Image 1: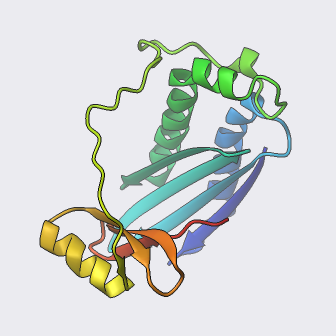
Image 2 (image 1 turned 180 degrees about the vertical axis):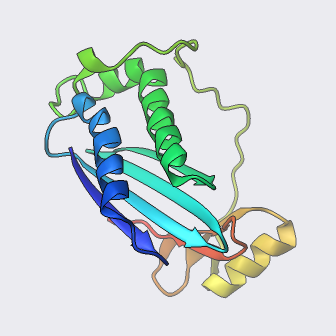
Length: 176
């Protein structure tokens, strides 16, 4: 596994980078060699945030942690990613049975009950209304929702606007 480390608002020390690489390399035994892990380190207003994303041929593992001690945060990120892989081991085996990017023999069994069924408890149908991004944000706020699906008038594609944890907005656009 190749690890790409990006830092924002501070310079990560070589020791920190080496620590992150060695900790994430423990997860490398679950994947083939060509998988990439992206780690982003951010320093904002005295708090440190670590985000790690592993994209394994369409299956995305992601964890984030805010901490005062970045080294303990790295440990928690690795634990979170490992737990995700363990919890969904059976489903991953079914999805990727003929692929070589996962090495399932190395994945530990989950101490929790395996998640076999995702249960949809409610379905809702609605009309997609053509509108601009600003109109979609306004509609989302009026409904007091955290996201809103709409037909983007500019691109003629289905998009989603959402409220981010930092109070700003995000836009999800499909990539066909």
